[in-house]
Length: 103
Length: 165
Image (cartoon, rainbow over all chains, first blue to last red):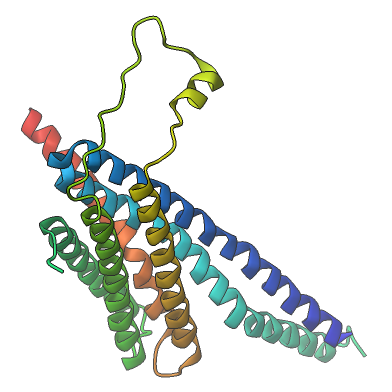
């Protein structure tokens, strides 16, 4: 029973990490589109190159942090959360045994 | 490759903001009584990685922009009076194929994004795995550039409003 509970915890963490890492796809596509459009804008108006570059850098940084949130959450779910949850489960089981709720 | 002034300026701003926020984070650890050498090491590494990531991204953007040097695309055609359409039809009409140079820049940027994400993923795994670095202190500074950009935006808006008055 304990193995099943630990397995469920690990599986949920892995699924959560996978879902969190989906957030990394969007910024890549978005950055690519933004750069393509900025390149076209610079091609049409070369005198606005500095301003376009500055705005694009900030926009890309903003988009990228969204992917980073997903990455950080995914890493924490894979490496930190399982140990934390399993420890809590074991603590709860120990307490339940001590209080006589479990044989 | 010579750095563009925009890249230097923005990276400098972000580096300064990240340094301030990292110092703030370390002081919060200190106040909570959680300070340790691992926190300081993690904060320094995290801040360095955040600035490095931003700088690499800015370099990719600069490279993409430099590829457009000397290119002269024709100006966009403005719709004539009475030709303005609404809804999906107008959107379909507006979507023109992008130029080959822009397409190449798009692919290069996506490739660069993948590389930077792989670098950050390796860093995050290492930060969590090793003992001498506090994982929270090492991962939190990666999110600081966004806060710095927001703060810059707010200050710029305030300055603009004051100048307007």
